[in-house]
Image (tube, rainbow, N blue to C red):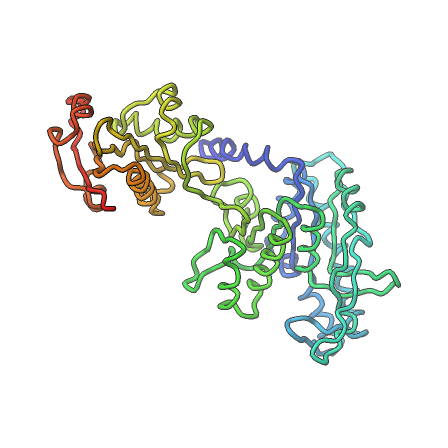
Length: 434
């Protein structure tokens, strides 16, 4: 029960932030066939019930492959794009049509077990995607394979305003009545950009983007994407990463790569601070900066447990408000997860490093080192020559970073006179090299 209450409390800011936001969700055909798809549908309905405006884009690659095999047709590709001749197009239309009906049915079926029980959930689609032929590339005619020309932004917007879930497929239509087979990543990306979506959510087989050791990369800037594409080659992860980078360049602030095989991955990604997949973000998800008056509440939440344990000296809200200019903080998606303060000693070239604290959940990422480096830089900029710290519990940490044992008698008189002999804090100092 405690875990549930804690999770709900921590997720409430995200519930409020996501309300009335537009999310484009890409569901590849593999996701629809996976055993976890029922849970994904349930989570999508939950998002809808919380006021999220949803556009779902579904792919159909495995379903198309199955129909080609049934008819004895050989798939043809060039540069990772399917060449769609007339017999292949018939398979595409068949696969997309049946898959759309299956998704609509699943959304309807899960209503009884969803937060929307008793309400009318509408799923709508249509000719919202206008396409054009790719044509001939490198001497290869792609025939009925196309690319997105535009998304009917107003038409989709009207459906979202009426609380419908909009379902788009990988089919597009030309003004002359032609049908084109499109890459679902292309449809999802263009829809997110043209609708001005707040998020693009890309489902894949993996947890997110993995490094060469198989470890999850939790966050990327768009400019970091090319180096990963080089090592990924022609893969599903590369396709998702290209789509995310393209959407970010088009103005979508946040794109997420999550797993369709992991139960609850979507909710964990959207309603927890660390998520479950990979975030491709235009803005820095975590930043080290100087504190402002708006950070006082977050600082109090961070340091209060350490004050209660006697590790830090107690500071009231009034004191923090008055001294906020002394603090540097690490902010992670709106949460203050680390802080440190610099207090120059009057009439001396000494400065005190104080109130260095890192949230227990984030003590594995060298944030303390980053804050120490920031405080040292600030001290040098002020012309200070020596940095000192008073500590009762973390002496070894400071010694490992160049601080040497000192004593109260070494401190400038203005600071030595304020030393609290009841706390018996140990004094360490470090010269600041230019």
